[in-house]
Length: 446
Image 1 (cartoon, rainbow, N blue to C red):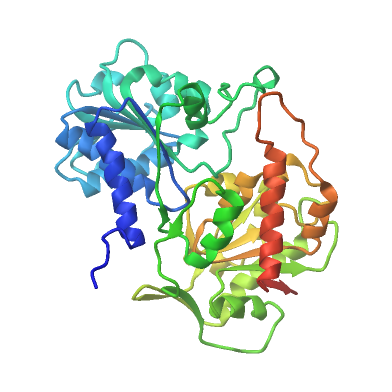
Image 2: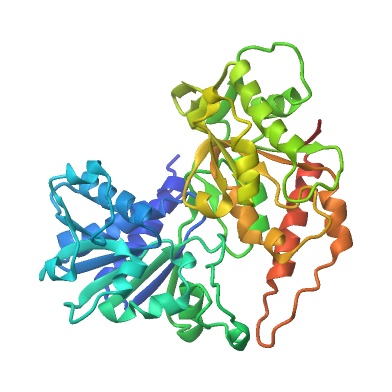
């Protein structure tokens, strides 16, 4: 029997990419491209840039949100497209990784005067682009990477540099951080504080919107929890087949309370909730921090290994990440890690955006709290935390989170003209995850 070429997730993903590339041949002035976690959006940015310069003979600029993202994108484009010359625009006193200087087709420049006049790929962060003074030859295409982290006021500072725009990003991530007072714009859905893709489509509803239909990072078992909780209007599926990634524990050793959570992942679960006894602890919970460290140590003690496709690798510090809501919680975990596990990457959710590890441990943002503030309820924060893993994730908290949510009843300010209540959306996502993990028998009490 003949199977349709669009019957597989990979075929659907490639068809979506072809549509994205086709918008540039058609000369569409703007495109908003929504992406679920780990969909390969950076790869799409690379292909857009390569097509623009290499095939369409255009000037292409890429705006990232951080210097590190610019470094990574410059490295990837120069390595994957050795016949194309790329330029990285960096400030004069910014140290760049030595590996970038070793790439023969990547030029690091420190001034706009060194930008090529003809077809090119130029990469820099959005702030650097906004500080260009004097006349700059107009670019044909501007690609904004991780665009949902860029507030519209910063996008407006660089919008005049190009004729066409592609805004690529994950709409479920943490909203842009704006530190000034925004009261006067709260009713404006295209206000300067709003993520630029939302503001753009609010002003110009005719702007083309496309979406990547798969996650290359998340497994099917995770998608069934994450997609309805955080992306109710963005359907997507996992590219990985069920069972293609797994955790193996070779040594049973003596039973400890935390072993049940590890064994549940070994049996095929990719998301597991681990609950400690109920207690109000405030921001730093020393017992919970120690439990996270104990879990990491237990994985190593039991000879854990990962099977990803046909490749097997031992679990070590570099395969594990820990994500927290607060810097103080990050410090509490780091200071308890033994030297042998110092390679475990422990960071806040804001710094973990765009990163991944095969195994993740999440310090639940509502654990041990008497309140449920807008910061801790933020759906984007929990979404980032629960979408960094490619194999499995453990969500660690004090028990009682679901009960606290049911008692909380969000009362966030209602803003005239704004249909979406961010506090309610966060409350709904938190409650959905708590109830669905409980219903699936994914809660382990230690």
